[in-house]
Image 1 (cartoon, one colour):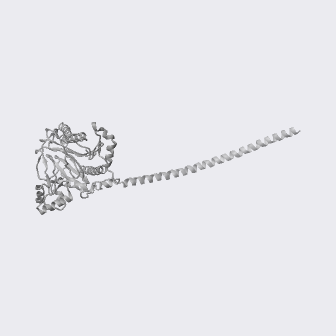
Image 2 (image 1 turned 60 degrees about the horizontal axis):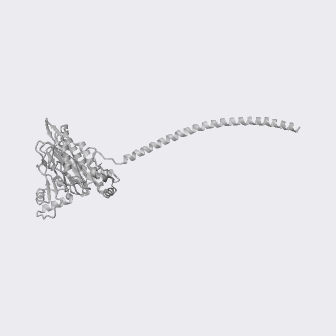
Image 3 (image 1 turned 30 degrees about the vertical axis):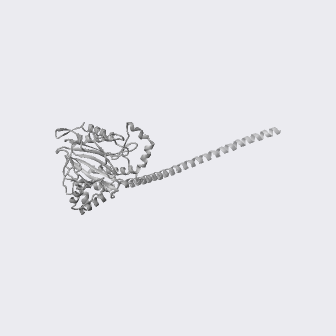
Length: 439
């Protein structure tokens, strides 16, 4: 009996359990459907929230972008015409280095020498001064190339160029400024011609003009030149001196003999011919014009880099600064002093020379204060307010204190082109300080 009761209770429990489990399932199903509905609602709400977040994030990104743009805009860029000093364009005070060329052959070891790298680190302030002067040179010549055209007065070209240099280099007495007068020699005039006050010479379409100017920081000079010719007929003449200059730079290096550089220059220069008005000329390397080493406040230092073979056996040395310049001529390839003198320079090695003329003493004081041993021209004296100084200037030249540098010319009717760069023979490599995108 007890077993039967137990069976009946078990079956009742199973039925009740089944019923209760069915009820639980029904409850679970209804809960699930409610939860699903809630989930869908939440998803919709979340999507709306995500959309609004995305919109807000995109607006934030836009704001950030606009902020970045503002930041980029706030970084200074050079104006046109240039007016912002180069020092303001490089707030770090570090200026871009020129073109680096590695030494060759016996000097390959210099590239990786730790000792030579340390020597360079010690010279960094000097390198930076040269690079600042070079950056000014690049920006000024870029601007001048964009504005020069036939019909301009030569004096206007020079004064525009010089005033732009003064602005960009933040001219400051002998600490920063123009290194020598702007040479703008035309046609058969090779170098050292700049217009004196009142000169009415006009640049013509068929002229070949050598624009040679220099900049300096603390007396560290960058000397670079290029040729302007509007008529494409002269292109081979320009190419000859450009390629000859590049060859001279390539050959230059520590322990290289100056005569070897000259021989390489001549070989390239005289491989060119140019046809001018139906007549073919072989381009000649001017044999009595040279490149030169550059010292501090001294544009022409002790060593000369010849443009032809057979020069001196002297070697280039580590740490030296050179102006490698070549002149290609359709004339005789030999220049003589001619025309009115405009360039002057105080003799670098002159000691005390007694002067009798009070006016000469006064003029010398002006020259010492404003130029020291840097070259100057008559226009620069005029700008300083000097008048009626020609007799005093002649007296200073006659006494050997001031050296006149008259224009040098080949035969009349000939044309001369010139290209020039400043090259620094660093302990580990060669740096073409004045190299730019243009030449």
